[in-house]
Picture 1 (spheres, rainbow, N blue to C red):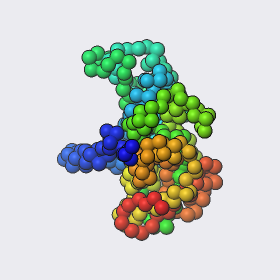
Picture 2: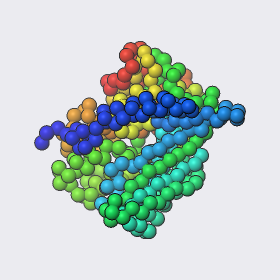
Picture 3: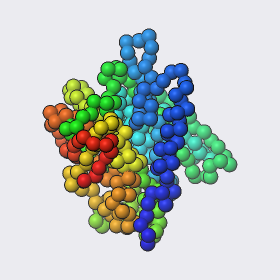
Length: 335
């Protein structure tokens, strides 16, 4: 079997990045400019008030939905939907305030959608924010029966002078990682391809993990708000935060780096999570492709100077030193 890549599984990250650049160029002519456009979350300054900034994010769950629908388990993707949006939003230092969902389906299945909403409610509880509304669209002839899609929208707020942008990151700063709960909600096109090629079933029990394949794949995305909230309340100076989603550590950490510095990630410092090695072996996926596709056990990264990095470690028991920022061409290296 040839070595698999995310692109062979149908996902072209480079093309998606080109599309974002196109949108940036087109929005430049709009009168009201967005803050941090193209970052994990972006927003607007509310004029006429005391410098509050409203930050917003939107995201979905991706083809993890296919796994959930094939298995008939629908509440965990509701948690994922909230997590993907909230984790993006909080990288800016904003407090999550409200969440809205969009559900599209060919034919309403009340019991299925109740499960989805139960998951969304659970996610909102974990993220300490309100579900303020949404839209359910029944679109017969567009979506096949039994298929639904999800999108989420999150709004938060912070003071303008408290925005975390990454612009103050300097050589000598420390990278602090927070572990992921698993695959989160990225890389599932490649994951499903690996499962298909190896003729595995979702109910296949894996003795090494004491779980079925499906249970591993549907593990909900971890929400990091409570950890970030502690740091903000304690006044710990965080220079940048990255949510590790599609594109992995290299594709997401670089988004907060200013020119003239590079992030060096020490692979040996990542707490071992054997599910990534399992997929790599099954799919014969090269190391670089693994890091470009999956979070590899790191769901969230914070950047701080040495003193504040130590304060992060003291406040968050699961946090770990992941690497350092050094002088060089703007990039991310996996050492």
